[in-house]
Length: 477
Image (cartoon, rainbow, N blue to C red; front, side, top):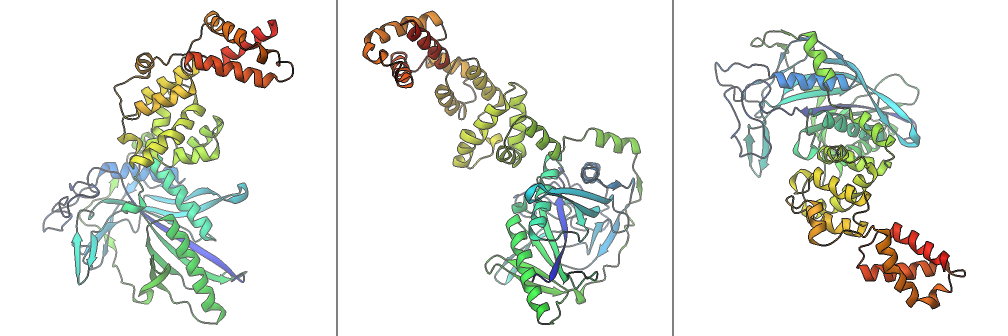
């Protein structure tokens, strides 16, 4: 296998985050009652004419710009003709000849802090097909997905390992998620991945037959499918056997790829210009406004978080969810303490979310309440122990502000120097045998006296201030 170079290209289908479909009025929504979100256009009724979803075009422009692509201002559409049960019209509206985005790249990070630019050939707009559900001898068709806006993003065959492929899909997913282009949930099909894999002898410029593995629905399966194909194809080549050009799928049960159809039998799609959609000349100023108003790129956000002093692990956790990152940003705008905020979010808050199987925007906790708690902690009004008590309460009740909880539960720390000194004086007098050991065992003495103070105050004393006063009193003694 070491004698072969692995050649990989990736095609991603990404569902656009629009309220209605790309070329018709049907609504978009995952998990709805089958065939409840369809229109005459989706079902190909005679006389039902398509129109272009402006928001879908805007999102495609955002994606193309983020992927460093040349944006085509003349918007044209074509028909891809084929017969299949999931395509009731008998054709798909796409952009075969004039894609909205061309010649881009996306930089990925690999091990050992090395980076690689992945060349992207094209990005084009098209519509999704219906969803088939197979059951014993029946195939049921749900047309809710039919007509949903897609962008297809196609790389050049420049990836050289499963690791690079996973890194690319991961980076693409994050980029599109934080732009608001798509929710990119592979488990729900809003991000789908096809990989083309071929091998060639090292040093050879000639490509061998490529094998396409379709509809990979997780990063783990992308990795497994490529690694299996590399082993399968290399085993054929070392025996001087031909690798057939074909389409395969990844079977999760056997953890292998399985043949679906030969590429030799590929259909002639008879592409031609879509007659019901006239070319649209996009206004250059409109394109500039879309780009200038684009959300912060995920890569820029990562850089900013790094400058705040957040660890790589913390950044990865925050960036794993758009809702979590937005919550962090909203809290940060109220109290400038990124370390404490992120520690609470990826610690206690994430533990609660996992326990409840919810997203952060589904629970009672608000940025205002979390920021208020952090402020109280920073001001020395409460201790870290009290903060944990308060957080447990505001996670399930957004009506109780931390300041109110502090008053109701008497959690406010004693911050008056004279009051603390008055409390410590009898404690020191009662522990003279301990105090006499201060020169020999200072840490033990400090710990003992602090423990007695905490016991008397039930933990409601500023520990830093108390420690300073203990030291002052011991020095006097």
